[in-house]
Length: 272
Ligand SMILES: C[S@@+](CC[C@H](N)C(=O)[O-])C[C@H]1O[C@@H](n2cnc3c(N)ncnc32)[C@H](O)[C@@H]1O
Image 1 (cartoon, helix red, strand yellow):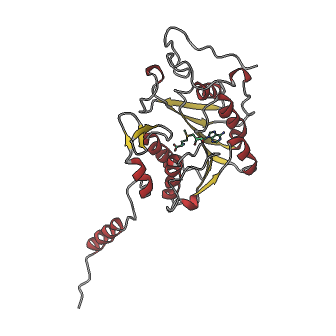
Image 2 (image 1 turned 180 degrees about the horizontal axis):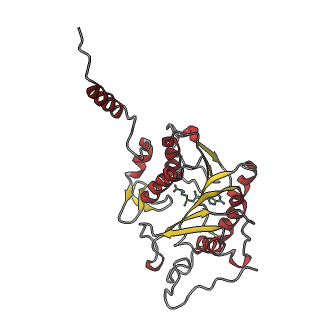
Image 3 (image 1 turned 45 degrees about the horizontal axis):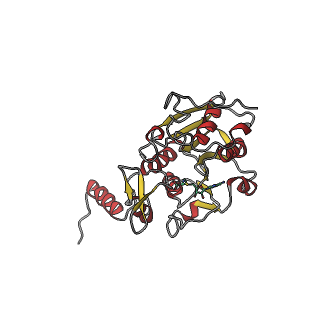
């Protein structure tokens, strides 16, 4: 005859079994393939070891930024997320894992003209992600009619690309929704677009340092900007005078940080 277990013992057993099965998993659980990718991260440089020679690559956001994207999705609870610039999908996996862990029907639409051996393939994140193999401007047609809770912009960092993404997709972002941008301190193309949003009272924002140390000293680190859309209004108007802007002068302080790098501030031509 078996003895009934006391209630606290039953609770403890249930909890231990669920942890052993991986359920009730610790905050921020990512699929094995993503953790394997993270194991190539070099915290000193903020790059990833790639290739047989283990050289450093900087295509994906820093691990700390990937985990920040995860945390922000848990915090802000978006349901429909749009990402530009998928690459291997390290950032995509963090966004999708957070949507999964929220336990609601969230989805990430991610856009890139190049398909790079995505980290989510073969994982439980597959149903959460739709990949569009297009440039962001062309993908806009396929997404017409959708509204988004979160935009994550990390594609080509020319001003012309980022401002076009904002012109097309920001009107589809709900009021109270957010925009996450990587490389806003390093790349003046992104910095100029962020400055434009900052001059518009419809948006609230903060720019933060990130750990990566690549590039000329004056241009470190790449940075992230977190934007909140406080009100609806007319779409951003591109400034053609900035169309060629990408990385600024490596020896000058990046535009968005302001101040003088080698004694000269970067002049932002006024919108025409
Ligand atoms: C910095 S990587 C993105 C990294 C990714 N967010 C991550 O953290 O794993 C930039 C990507 O943007 C893509 N890209 C370049 N131009 C684009 C465009 N016009 N629209 C969408 N993606 C673009 C590139 O092919 C590249 O894979």
